[in-house]
Length: 183
Image (cartoon, rainbow, N blue to C red; front, side, top):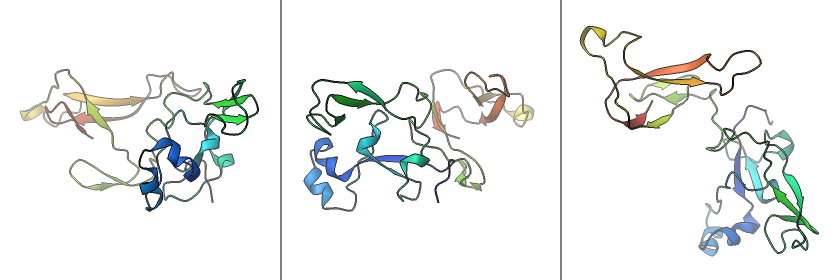
């Protein structure tokens, strides 16, 4: 059963693999023939799967429908280009697709994950960070102070109808001076 909150992953349709990979003949003979679709690939060229690799119907997708553009160079479906969808008609990813949606595929925060110490946690999300600023790490009496140190905060960009952008969704304290890592 498809659910709105399930993860969505796009893979190039098997019949198009040869157009996307110099190793297509080798890959199609293996079980890993799938090539992840880029975030700009049109719906006609991808197979949607859930986090378990099972097929997902496009009507259950959160993706915005593709734009259709008049392109006189298109003869028919996928001819001469892979984004041609018909006679003089080309598909293009909608500009209504928010830039934060599915760029690194979907994060399902209802799944368990592991913290940096390897402990399994419920309803969490791992994020990676890299930065060039000084990371202030509190030591001694202030090591456990919840207001001392460098934090990563997560907010909803531009807010929502219910909360302003300043509303904090989650935060975590960086406890090492290393400038990149996972939290």
